[in-house]
Length: 276
Image (cartoon, rainbow, N blue to C red; front, side, top):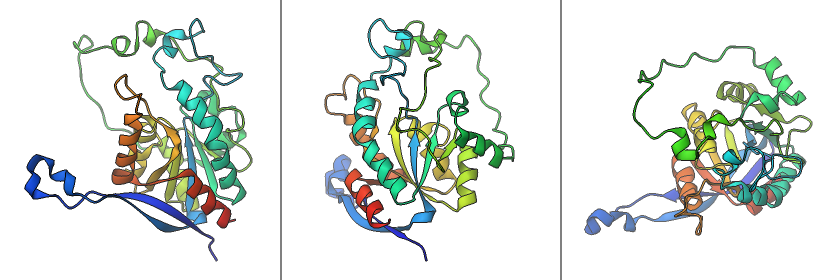
């Protein structure tokens, strides 16, 4: 008999319009609501995506005068990642492992994923080739658009990431955890286990967790229900949004409404404890 996770789940009621308000008809909608969703534990997974050790002891340093400073200057998010990864994620991950929930690590590249036996198991399990992507845009090399270096900083495109990039200590793959780098790998691992309910944590909720390989856009198109733990995610913020963490707040609405749900960390932990 399946063990059921009873997860209090936030969703967004984007209705009804207040037609009397014209352009501000949105003010009539009901907004946030929460209800308990009953998920068979063996059909669910905690997905830790792009947890990097930048700014952690032993990882690439973050600050003035450090190696790869050209890259670090464009990584305003590191301080928030260190805080969230150090405080919010350990109890979430511990609860998931204690109750036997499948834990998946989505790495941003094979360079560090290949150091782990869990990824070697993935390569042995995923033996079918990924579908060929469609041919892309034909664009002249001299197209006059803002360049990577204009957007991320002079010299950014010519500086490679540190070889010390890895998972933060204590948050990397252990035991029977799964590791994937590509959407094809992740989909294959999940299909083989009949998992369809994915709770994401990591960086960045409004960038990688939506748009990178293994992120919510790809997985939702494949039919998965995707959501996140609010306190377990970090957003890329702008100069204008960082004081209020406005991009993160917007990302909670979009994640819930477009992809499936948002959960609070204490609710997720309690659901795991009850499902042990």
